Image (cartoon, rainbow, N blue to C red; front, side):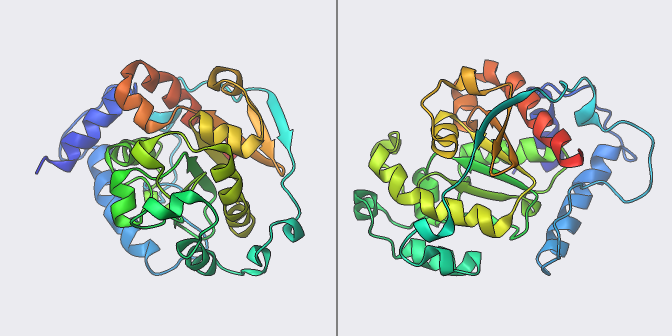
Length: 275
């Protein structure tokens, strides 16, 4: 198995990070060890998720991810979600993410349920300040019932590590909860059937920032038909929550040229957490 420190450093380089020094006293090494500690702490059910894998000692230095980060852009679209009474099927009455996940696993609202191995409701901290929304489960996600655990998920984990946030501190879900055949783009009726689940998840979590991964996620959340280029580079508002649009990690695996703009988008979202 590859050394996790080497894998982490390789991801930093791919994402456009600055120079990194590897030695026994390196902050990077201390951060890698800290991530495991954060994971153990989060399993105990903290009231609020940790935002940084750094230690709590005060420091005047600028975090690596913030160096040369783009400024927070201007406003984009403003969208209001449907009122809870319009969600239907008693979704609005569900008080926990666990109860909602149980409903998703039994869902038969669209044809996607016929080909699934497992529905993939989403996972993460129930009070996450940062939420990532993708398009739909892939093959590995369908097998495991967990979102973003295949190659695209590994890349997302690297992005999170680079902005000093453990995966356990965020919540990750998709526009549709079941895998479309051959990983095709979800159809409009499939998206419409699943959106009430996602809307209620966001209502229960109440995040501070949302990141839409890819055009399908952005269009579904914002209710528009626009290109990814038109939606990037702005801070949209979904029920008052800042929403940043960027490329899906799977797209970065196909086209590494999109890694730098994605890195900029994610750093904008990271800055919004501190705003």
